[in-house]
Length: 195
Image (cartoon, rainbow, N blue to C red; front, side, top):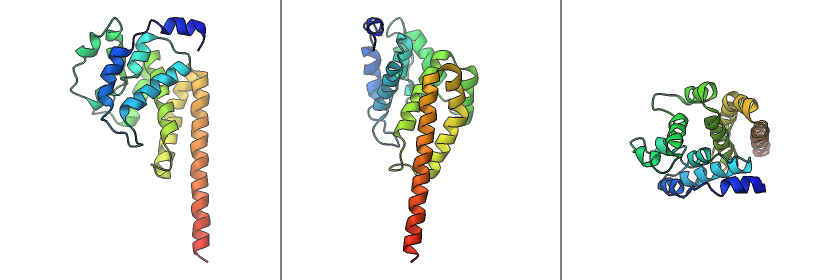
């Protein structure tokens, strides 16, 4: 973090948003842990990429909040501070509606999303791609998720943030390498057991 970034971030008060995000602690993730930690990781990735926009950072810790609490009162967030209205707008923009497939949702973000929503979505996907492993998911899901990232997220990253694009491309390559290693091990085991 540069001194200039520190000076910008020192005035960003995220505590009311973090307090609201703690309601996600009881919401488990398929990969383990809980949604709160994922929200924190998403914000950390934005900071790692030198993002200092206060509304974007605040929205990142609540980007899945509406999906977890569909009946939530967004006025609570709207009135937290001067960034509240923009944070609510970003949360709504980043929330998948019940009638959208995952592909429709990702297409909507890619084609109609604001710059800030796209950046948060890239950080979100970096967090997700980093977390998926063969310890929790089968290779079929990892392949599917990698293909989905390549089709919907990678072009968006290439368009708006080169370094995030490179990280996502690397994560896809690494996941494919792991899948290949798993298949090789299965083949070796099958050959060994057939003796």
